[in-house]
Length: 125
Image (cartoon, rainbow, N blue to C red; front, side, top):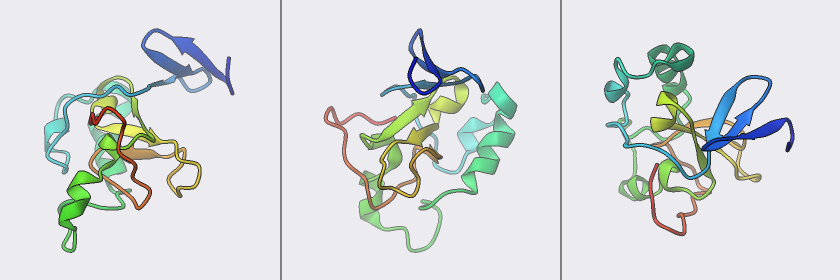
């Protein structure tokens, strides 16, 4: 057991809250605005959680001023992003970069920040 985490099939489960994390695992993305989540996010409030968390975005692809280079620097392709398990893990993960203000916080796979570091294998999600 590491810091209250217990190993489970396919990843690590945080014992006290039951939130599971899977390292380097995720599914296909959405359009970046949550439309693809309709009707499929079923765990922990699902669609409501997805919509509520979208308000936490640092860089929204729908906002004016979104830079073209940020499309290649999204959380889902960052070595420090760990996907959640279940339906929410198709779009959401946790930042694990200690020097980032988002460390330990849930992040949308199409969000991003200045600490982006591409994964060694080049995968996304």
